[in-house]
Length: 455
Ligand SMILES: Cc1cc2nc3c(=O)[nH]c(=O)nc-3n(C[C@H](O)[C@H](O)[C@H](O)COP(=O)(O)OP(=O)(O)OC[C@H]3O[C@@H](n4cnc5c(N)ncnc54)[C@H](O)[C@@H]3O)c2cc1C
Image: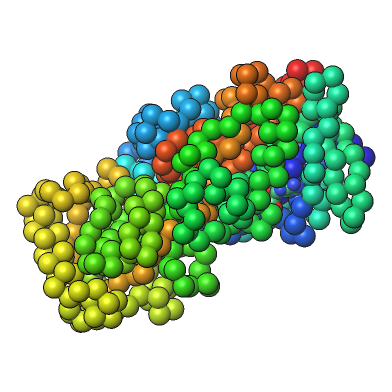
């Protein structure tokens, strides 16, 4: 069995790449190790970071490639690969339009979240989006999907990757593709042991992600000498309820004006930072945990279309603690009442004065939104820790998604896209850029494979 191109992984990156390749006339064999496709993409919050869209324009939000690029650069702390930022930015609007042309529907409300200077979270139902891409692939008649098919290692002829060895139903077979192999196998958030090797500080975090995301693609490429990027910046994302096993998603009331306090009742961070940095700060607090403290107007400012901002549903689920006074709330969360009341009073005074001397917070999130006081009962606390939802690091690729080896040369015939790739995010993370990267880089990788038959 062979096809023009073999794609490993049936998440957003794999299906976007498959559709792009099939629409260009290529035959594709898409391998998914799990019984079902979807990976982390299907369980995600469905937030996509796009800039300069018609939706933003209709809502009077001024955004652009340049602002998106400067936010990504600033967030990456000088560690992100500028070529990958360029690849993301220069292909993002076309990918938004491509999704729409394929029938993707976006929630009408735009939100600002981690790392964004303006509201640019475009929200989809993520499982539906993967299903839509899969259906569009099927409709081309050129994509064969095999589930329960686990790629085990890459096959090489004369230095070029020409196929994969695949285990399916207990049988190991070899599959070949003249256009090469595209790894879209996701990250390794379901492999805490591998995470620990790069980021021992994450030991106290919760680990969430697609069940198959244990780093197979990374290891297959490492075996051929692939280089890697951003490994030290694996971090847990802030806002995961420590004991809730129903919701996979974080709750980010801090981005609507809540503060984060530790068990001693003290703030410990500028809450407008990327939620990866908040997660790292949280894990350093006593018990590796914190509380988001907010009042009623902040709770009501949530958005039921965006999972990380859907506060009212979490309230209905009993995940917020609630009290008419801060003293009573403090007793419920076993924080010294005088510490909590003092912390909130100091913070409110800072908001009024327009200067947060303690942590330098200036906005709700990144460079967006004016701070609000926490003053109107009832008051709420959301217990929060950090969860590793994604590893956001991995194979070094160039702007065409060719995998680069440790000596800086492309590994012929080997491409990668999505969470298996490192370099875009650098030291922190913008909401929507992982799912965005899966789609955008998947499409780029497919184009490279097709333009690269011999190379
Ligand atoms: C709860 C949660 C919420 C998130 N929310 C957001 C969000 O709102 N916005 C955002 O930008 N990012 C979000 N992320 C991160 C984002 O979802 C992922 O980074 C992105 O979806 C990765 O897409 P992917 O296609 O690269 O990988 P995945 O969607 O994980 O797909 C990889 C697939 O490859 C398969 N696979 C692995 N190894 C093999 C193998 N050897 N052979 C065959 N198949 C294999 C896996 O089983 C999996 O199905 C979230 C993640 C989680 C877990």
